[in-house]
Each structure stands twice: as structure tokens, then as C-alpha cells.
Image 1 (cartoon, rainbow, N blue to C red):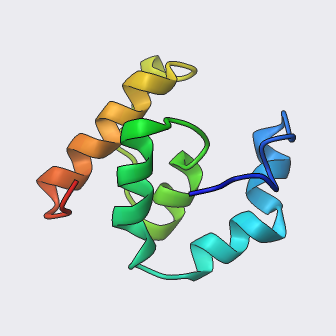
Image 2: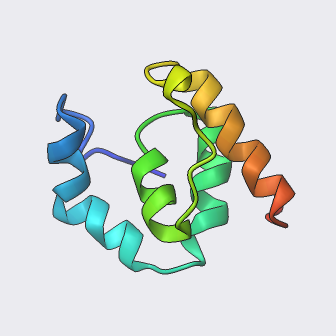
Length: 85
């Protein structure tokens, strides 16, 4: 999934409010497996979208800033909740 629109934004707060990011979230539940699969190859800023879309947060305070660990936890969460990732 291309994130050309938000990749130049260093502030995640700005990125998650960007119209392109909001459009992805607005796609509904069908976007969840796409985002989870994206995290496997390109762990980046989809954590907020996943949390907003699913209402879940498998991360702990100790995970902050450890992007690969955060991605792995979300992928594991997806598997545990029946997503094909």
C-alpha cells in the first residue's frame, strides 16, 4: 500500500489526520487484513489506523518506538483474530 501522501510527514499526529490516511480508515473492516499484510513487509505508520479500525491495541508501553516489534505484535494479533496474514 503506497503512502506517498503521508511519508513526508514526520509527525504521526499530522499523518493520521491527513485526508489520504483518513480515506484508508474509512474503507471499513475490509482494510484490516490489507494493513496487517502491509506491516509484514513494510512496518510503518499503520498502527493508529489498525487501532482505530479494530478497537484493539496489542501493544504495551515498552513497545513504543520499536517498529518491527510493534508490527510483529499486530500481525500476531491478526492471526489470533482470524485474519489471513
